[in-house]
Image 1 (cartoon, helix red, strand yellow):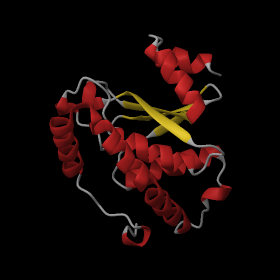
Image 2 (cartoon, rainbow, N blue to C red; image 1 turned 90 degrees about the vertical axis):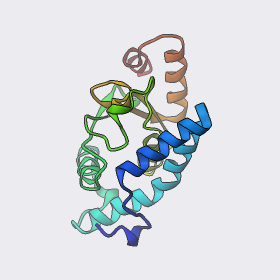
Image 3 (tube, one colour; image 1 turned 60 degrees about the vertical axis):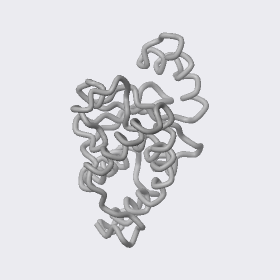
Length: 181
């Protein structure tokens, strides 16, 4: 993978975790916004790296069907060092991205809430580049907060807004996502 050609660089996992810890320590609750914005800003370059990676395999992201896109995206993120992912639909309007070894997560941090905020921004831009509308991402389970996996929900911005409202009212994310289909 030619990182320089796609304006990417290899960043040690320890650096990303140290950055998050410093932001939590020094900014309190606003740290999530900083990481999400940084992730979103990098999504374009990550997608360019994905496109280049596919080109080297004589594949084109624009011609992949959904199943093949999901498989290739999973392979790309694993090869790029982020970790393994599976992608599955939840009804017709939300996708679930799961990982038991996601690179941004730190099970030793014992944070009280899901904390892969860089990833939520990056995924919103990355997956949004293949969708007809802007996408939003919400992490609902995280290894940094004691879950066995990181789970991200991906959907249209409006749909995710409704999902978040239902969750804020106390509904479990799976029931809320199913109700939106």
